[in-house]
Image (cartoon, rainbow, N blue to C red; front, top):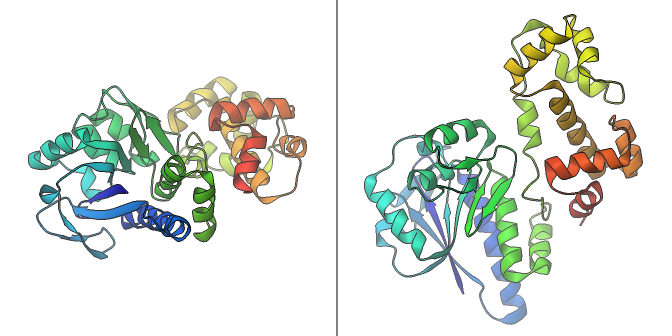
Length: 321
């Protein structure tokens, strides 16, 4: 039986803990019904001496024990994110985490939980992610960590880091699939009415695009305009013409405001739009590519592989399980 330990600090994001906890619990129930054996033992551990963990939303959870009372081996240690992860950590907690990680088969974080792993030096030399809004801060605080902004979750050896909130469920399903196979993971996803196997490499696109706003007057309506004209030519000249400024000035301002090039931004918007069509419609891949402005289905496939790490066909299959 695998021991799953959730480490929750005050002001934790409760969904980071509750959603994966429910997924593991459901997997255990499914496996027990079929084999008569439990798969998981779940524990909630408080990251302080106080065993009542008060989440950032005011929800109170009574932990099974405090972190310094944890004994024995651990299969999977999951550090839950929350507001306090942006503050300095207790030296005792850091020391405990370093010791405990050595006896865990897998060490995971969800959302800003990566800050605690990073502060303990456990992510040094590794790839990792966190909520898109905090990736820059994590990279600044932990310069030896290769922070990736796009993925829903990242696996580097036995360390797993997940993006914000709902990504904890994606990570839990991936871990369940590793442990118990795809059939159990699929049944958990069906029971909890969530998608199975959103690929870890899939970008946090909705979040990324939501932050792409600008105070620069000429660029304020550019995002919605791009979405309304995806099937048209959207090169830098066309975008600059819409904004009423020269292409050179447009490219410079765009990069300053959005932190990327116009071409890369348009590609991401097109992939996001195509992703939604593949999920929600019966359009063929060729039709989706045409509607979203890709020169061909093959061009769209290359963009999907580059940005989402899956092909359009694989993406549709995974979201239509």
